[in-house]
Image (cartoon, rainbow, N blue to C red; front, side, top):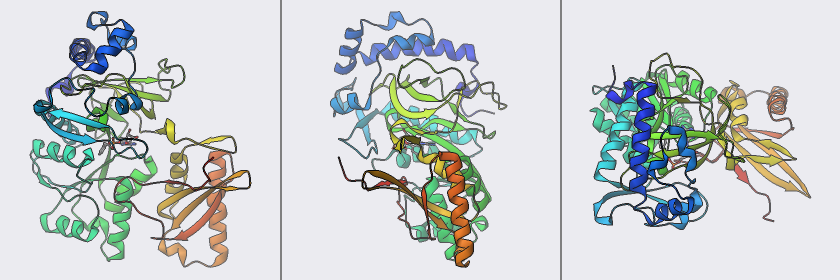
Length: 431
Ligand code: DLL
């Protein structure tokens, strides 16, 4: 049973729809000064598109392009036709903004509702959105989707754990949207208040907006006794609702009636061989106010080969392995923070938070992993703590191929953020 008939489209139907929509969106995008120039430079127009693969003839769009066109350079409609603005959470450089017409808000809400319905959320559920509102798309974006689906929707916002738990209990909340690092922290808070997380009525948690591993998902499911579904999106492509897990929990279906996804080698921009990791490049097919074509997301993932047991033909992407710009190079070795998380969250002694710290000793970069330990373990004697530290270090060394310093710290002692977790603290002096 589908929420939206588009979920049932076959591969051939999706391919045909993509060609039609790509031609339409190109014609529309050409109304913006930015794409008018880009298309003219590349000498390309809608008539050059006859298969979805022809998208590769188009120039790519980068974050830098969005910055340079800030604030209004990518609009295809006059400002009075817009009804909403969101801004990307990027931590560096000048901001980028995205704009929505009334129809864009409708389309986005329907996509989001489709995602929630796919993983089992129903109008009878009481839904609490525990992520930040404001410019971040995880607030209003998810909120509108939940309302569209028909859930009683509680806009709790992020943080204030005491109020969150009261709302969950008072209103019998059965579905939450929560950033994974906050889900772990919130479980710690509940336990410290003597509340067993699994005693809450939550049956489904939608988790996303930041990289996390399968181990982290399993932890969240174990703690709350619920199902947790991965949710991927980015402001430039509306926000959440781009790709979402179905109940099979084997990769996220990317809605190919609304987006064209490519996965390319970030160096050569050639498509990666099937099943191999590369950079996700995304195109909006239905956005009116601010279409974005071939956007380099910097997110690294792969297409999962083969059909999904759920029967949907929309292709699946694997969970995000990291971003090409969050790769650390330590002593010549490439390291992604998710490799560290994968090891740590698979160890029951490790608590819910960790931090990678980069420092410099003379000319040498030092890589330290600070690891919170569960309360039960912290009371152990020095010898067992040292043995545990050695085990964490050995596992990290096997995965990363360099030996990090490991510091075990008390549960609750590392900084917690209300939004996306900050996993790396770079204390090296600026060059
Ligand atoms: O984080 C949109 C969103 C909100 C998605 C709520 C899911 C839930 P931005 O703030 O623009 O948008 O950040 C987008 O966050 O390029 C990824 O690097 C990362 N990201 C988002 N979802 C996931 C995920 C929202 N499920 C950037 N796994 C993206 C890993 C994710 N990384």
